[in-house]
Picture (cartoon, rainbow, N blue to C red):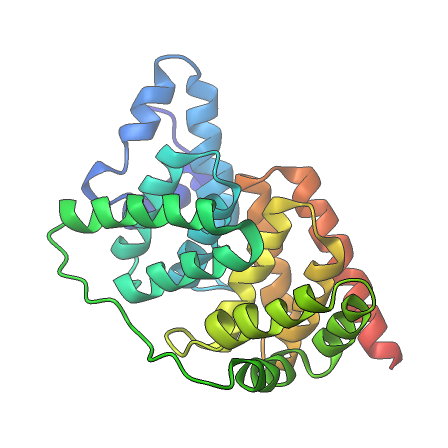
Length: 260
C-alpha cells in the first residue's frame, strides 16, 4: 500500500469523516483509477481538509451545502452527510444548511437533498425533531432587520437596484430569503455566511452575490483567512476554476473594503 506523510495525514482525516466505511469510495476507485484514489487521500484530505484554519465540522457543513446546491453528486452528498454527522455536526445543523440552499440553488435542489438526509437519518436511527418556527406577521420587517444585521447596507443596495426592474422580486428577497430563511437561529451567522460563500463559489454563477456575502461574512466576524479556506476547499468539489474565481472575488471584496 502506498504511503507518504500527505497520504497518512489525509487518511487520518478521511477516517474521521467516513467512519467505519471510510474506504468504500477508495476501494471502488482502486479498481479503475488507483492514482485518483491516492490523490483523493493526499490532496483532498491531506492538503486541504486537514488544514487547521477551519474546524472539521464547519468544513463538512460547507461541503454538504456545496454538494446539495450543485445537485449533481448524490453519492458524494450522501457520503458527506454521513461525514458531517461523524464529525460532530448536529442533524439540525445539516438540515439548516440545506434549507439555505433554497435561497441560492432553488427548492427542487434543496428538497432532493432533504429527502436524502431523511433516508440517512433513518439508516442511522436518528430521531430528528425538526425546528418549526411559528409564522409571524411582519416578514418584511423581520427580513430587513436580518438583512441589515448581516450585510450592513450592501444587501439593501442590491434590493434597491432590483426594485427598479422587479419590485416584487426585491420584496421576495427580503421576505423569504432573509425573513423566512437567513434569520433562522438554528446555526449562527458566521457558519451561515461561510456555507453561503462555499455554495455560491461552487455554483459559479453569481459573482456579484458572492461578493455581497463575502462582505457579509466579514461583518459577522468571519476572518479573511477563514473565507479563503472555505473558498479554496471548493477546488475539491467544484473544480479549480470555480475556486479561482471565488478567490478573485474575495480579493476584490477585501480590497474594496480597505478603500472605504
